[in-house]
Amino acid sequence: MIKLVIRIIYLLIGEFNMCINENFRLTILETSDVHGTVLPINYSDNSYANCGLAALSTIIAGEREINQATLLIDNGDMVQGTALTYFHAKINNSRPNPMIEVMNIMGYDAAVIGNHEFNYGRAYLDNAIKTSNFPWLCANITNKITGESFINKPYIVKTFDNGLKVGILGLTTKYIPNWESEDTIKDLDFKDVVKSASYWLHIMKDKEATDINIVSYHGGFERDLETGEPSEKLTGENQGYELCTKVSNMDVLLTGHQHRVIENLLVNGVLVVQPGYNGNCIGKVTMDLVKISGKWSVRSKVSKVIDANALDVDKRILNATCPIETETQAWLDIPIGHVEGDMLIKDPLKARLKDNAFVEFINNVQMDAAKVDISNTAIFDNKCKGFNYKVTMRDIISNYKYPNTLKVIRIKGSDIKAALERTAEYFGLVDGEVGLAKNGNYLKLQHYNYDMWEGIDYVIDITKPINFRITKINYKNSPINMEGEYDVVMNNYRAGGGGNYLLFRGKPILKDIPTDMAELIANYILRRKTIKATVNDNWKVIY
Image (cartoon, rainbow, N blue to C red; front, side, top):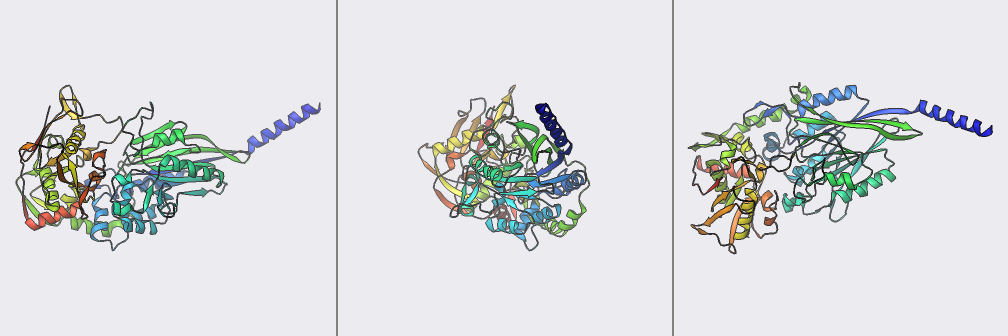
């Protein structure tokens, strides 16, 4: 009888607890790889584009109205990438940083450092962080002397009125030393994100008593999310899959860097999302939580990506950026010179199959600045149109969108051969027709990693296997000496091994030219007033 009474009491207590269980819905919104895109326009011609923070802000406002609790996190690569950000960073920074001003208006809860946050220098980044009304997070980039996060914020904990504690940890791809100028990062250590995540998530869970942990990682996935097979060379640039499979205490992984759209996928129980680039999408995570016996747990979690298509823009953002946008537009349309001949890119694929006037011009600018006779460069994306008769700053920024500087490195003939074989991997053949090689099912097209050289004569035969496609390399009308040494100018990204050109890393640097390429191009044209479109046909692709 006593046992029966006790059992009934336990059952009643259980029913009582079920009645008082507390439910809570948490919504997490993620932007990533916005790259300075505020307004829904293409700066090359001011045509309309379905993108930008002004449009995403409308989505965010709507989500905040209907959701119980909302967190807004940026996953990195925010402050660089458009004519607007270039104008503020390089021409006139007397006004507040437009990206930070917009993010403050939008009410971000946190932001993560991306690799492109370093592009305009540490002083610019430091000022951006200082003027933000929200914390910037980064756990794995540390000060060499103190060993602490270089921004002193590895994570934050958001505590809600119902007692729910949500930890947000920031991580950044450790591959930055392969791209960035040494002067910019000389005092920093770039630690492995998996080890850093394990360390800090343990602290967050045990010492901070977080109920939910969100990891925001400016990096992507190195493996296919369904099969686990490698989807790229495992260099450590992207470690998202490894994070999901090796790190505990992680409920959600916000990602970026690869410019992919990923939604509603679980990897080893971790919900992942990635919201494209240039503000064309926003990631949304919905977590339904339940509090049982005083402890919060996840009942369900889903993620989706919302497009920025055809949305009304936030007038607050238009008003805030109007003054600097007006100045930027005026600066962009100032003519600085003219082209004699045809320097337009009408077909991006054809421009990569045979020498063309625009690429030859960029290489000539680099060789002129460096005073060497071998150079390489790339057409960064398929939006590059080359130069028309009248050249303005808009044309220069649109065609050369990265704030690269130049380096002259000394390499062997065998290094040139290896680099050309690497660049030849860009192409593939399908039914005898030339196209782009398949580089993973989801990865962004890395047009910027296909280099075209000046100062040497070469042939790429893409009917041949990879690593055996270079059938000719001549220098000054003679076959290149594989053991000979050659001085080559290239941008700092490539000279540091960026794009898996690791063979360039550690080579002797003969000259460091710290001026941005956009400025070098502008100065080259300003000195000459008229530039000639020339094509010497020093290279070609056969198939």
